[in-house]
Every structure is written in structure tokens, then in C-alpha cells.
Image 1 (cartoon, rainbow, N blue to C red):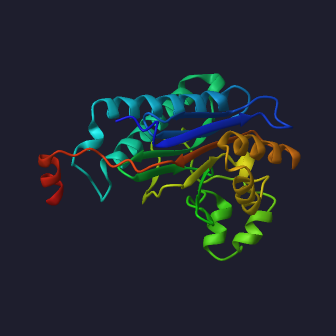
Image 2: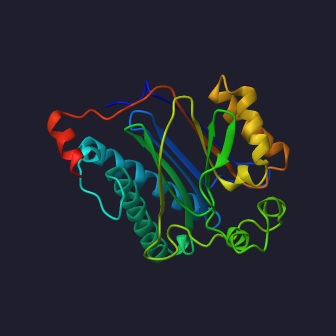
Length: 274
């Protein structure tokens, strides 16, 4: 089932004011209900190679699974739904390809990428991330960060060395503790949440979250929310106005209507016992 009439997606990416090239890669597909954003690391060419490989691999593998209707099967593991397993496995596969490329191509040595992805299915959102690219949710008047960064700074916050407010003002925010392509295996953090009509989800690289306060992201959505395209452009502009020290990428997804999965009688009966 296409979700194009149920979801509205837009994306914007920009090199910023300081960097000479853009190592971020973004992709979105409202038919699939998929948003993917990667922030590459590794210097000229290598970072954008890593993020490009990751995004292309994830989109292709998720599309193949949806076309096989794997989302509607009932097997699961470790409490994860089938969409969560599909997204996690796609990211693990992307990690292996980036890692192998970095080992075999001298010009790509040391490259890696963060990733944040969202897959909408059956009135739910599955969120997967590695690194410090983020996902926020606006629901009604409440705006909150749903993902927690895999970063040294976040670990210090978790241990009480910094408050969240102090962390937002900290000078060194960019030391990530997890990334795709750095090691042969990576731990992907997965969350699943029910969605509500009117929800707006924001995926962004640290080029946005480091340069624009969360309250200002919230205010921008409230001010320009009638047009997601205007919100995306304004968020990029705000980041550049504040210095644009890194590449800036943002994806926005809005839930327009409910999208329950189609289930036959047999599927419903199987669901009762799963």
C-alpha cells in the first residue's frame, strides 16, 4: 500500500558556510514511508562516499523487503516488529559495505557515517539510528528529541557530568561513540512508537542541531508549519545565519492521515496468537 496520500515528506541539504563540499546524504520516499539521513566522516570524498553507500543500501534493501511484502509477516525477534528487523538489518548491511570499502580502497581509509532512519507502517514509526544525527517529534504543542546521541558528550550527560542545557552549550559536541563503517559490526538503536495525525518528525544532521537551539527549531515549525518546504529552507537558513560550520541536512515527515496495515481474516487470527 502506497503511503503517499497519508504522509508528506520533504528534504533539504546544504554545504554550509565553512565546508567546501557536502558529505551528507538524504533520501525520502513517501510511497515506502521511508526517511533516511546520513552524515559522512572522513574528509574530502570519503565522507560523502560513506554516507552515499549507506543511504543507497538502506533504501534499496527496505524497498526490496516491502515489495516482497515482508512487512506483513509475523515472525519477530527480541521483541522487534518485522519493520524494525528490516530496518536494522539494512543498516547492518550498509555498515558492512562501508567498512569493507574503507579497508579495500586507500582513498576511503578511515571513512564512516552516522545514520538516522524512519520507517512508517501500520500507524507506527520505526526509528533506527547510529551516531549523533537526530530525530525530533512535534506532537501538538510538545516538541521533543526522540533519539539520544551516541556521543561522548551524551555519555557525560547520562553520568551527570553535564546537564542537558550545559551540553547544548558545550564546545566539543562531535565525538561520536558509534558510526557505520568504523568496525565490522555496529549496534543499531531501534525505537518504535505509535503515530498520531498531525505529528511532524524532524531528522537532521548535527550541522543543524549544533547551530540551532531546539526551541528555535520548534518555533520555526510553528511559524512556517503550513509549508514543510518553507520549514526546511528556514531551518537551513538559520543554521547558516548562526555560522554554518558544518553541512546541514534536514528531513521532515508529517502524518496526514492514519495508515493501518491491510489484514485479512487469517492474518488477524494469526495476530491474536503472536
